[in-house]
Image (cartoon, rainbow, N blue to C red; front, side, top):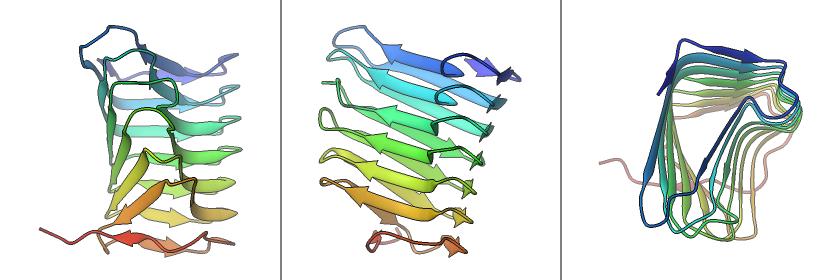
Length: 178
């Protein structure tokens, strides 16, 4: 568990969490913390084994990083990655605000009441096993608001705010409310 921390000016990523335990799900919890001005990603989450990752990120600011604010990387994974982000902000990151990429294991990012603002790309799902689920979230002021490619998908619960993005790639998939 990581809480009440400020991580900034790291020469790599602010937080790197890579599960290496086979056949077990590793858990990460981050709350009330800031990851800013890091040379790579603000937060990087991945796995290299058959073990998965479940992560909860609440009340976190991920800003001014040189690459992605939050990168969920399932490319080397065989175990599932499920990351839930609530009441958090990814802003002014040079490349992406929120990025999920996976040609390996199922990799899912759920954004609830979160904001992606003033990044090169606000949200991206890349790869046939990458998905993002948006609920009550805002994507604004990005060069590209959202994009998905190579089988990635971004789901919306129809209660999000998209505004002032220079470009959006495609149409969000609609998930029914329950």
